[in-house]
Length: 437
Image (cartoon, rainbow, N blue to C red; front, side, top):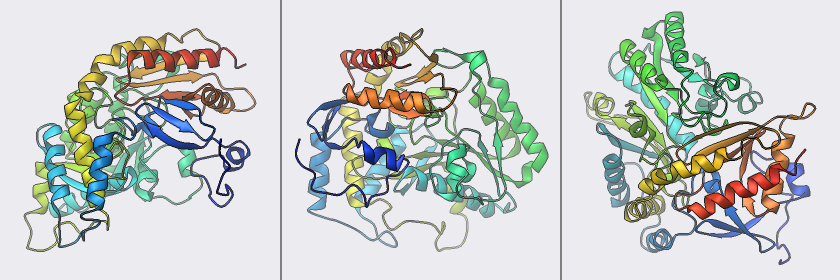
């Protein structure tokens, strides 16, 4: 272990118990493939793909080279009235990966920006069609859609909302689909809960369809602890949106680029949204990038007016040269190594390994789909979240990076994971859970 050449105090840790972390910091200094290296030199197996995002594995040579080469030839190109080849090539590849008719891409720089962009596209789409009165959004309880004001407004995770007071006006929320008494230890999609999509009809009746612009949902709710959609649920949402002329937005920041064994969850579930947000896996997290994929009818609505700027929205760094280079190299690597298929082939093994923890102390539920799993622990009566945090710390001490949401441990490894590493992930979690009261 080398002495620190920096002070911990000036940096205020995001989404972290700041004082608690700085009392016992966990510092990562390098990474390669499936492992991080900690400040003390220990190798840490990554069971969470960083933050659901390092899908191709860490510091892959071809992606690193692409970023280095791009930095040496074109560092930045103006976003407005100018272009460079990278985002055009990358958008073409993304459109080819997406389900048919999702064929126009707008680049942002994060999942939060992607969500806010999708909401703005939805509003502008209805205005372009002469229905500018459609301004309401419908989100869902327990949803996470980033930390922009749009995202926290349609999102439904209380801690992300309570500190900031006023949200966007005109937002309502569907009920979440999780009921542990009815679906605990389900493998894949639960049989119970599809009827909860019908609540959208109640909300439509309350506000009138003519005032509603879009419904936004995560196909699989990730940050709240891998809540898998019930059978028939997404299909019902699609049918109700079609019935009332409402756009359906899938937030695929987590599920996009192979997490379920397909390029997008829209393909996995065979449900076609009007807009798809993405980020994370598009560059395997090497350079920040996000975006929105729009169906043809959404894009074309903007092309019917007078000449000029069709969508008055954008970011300085949209389609940044380094991000575009990272994205091209990442998607090429997914293709060359057939990583989406690899993830799909391992999903069954991953499921069995996750559910092998059933019956361990304090395990009250296990949920999974694709290469996503959650192990939910009974909260301590006096301190919810404490048992999950203790599990995270002890896993790290045992050489495993995992993630907690309250008392739920979440696993979503890089798509390059092997069966032996899956065994190590859940074997380590099992050993740790046996030590926690």
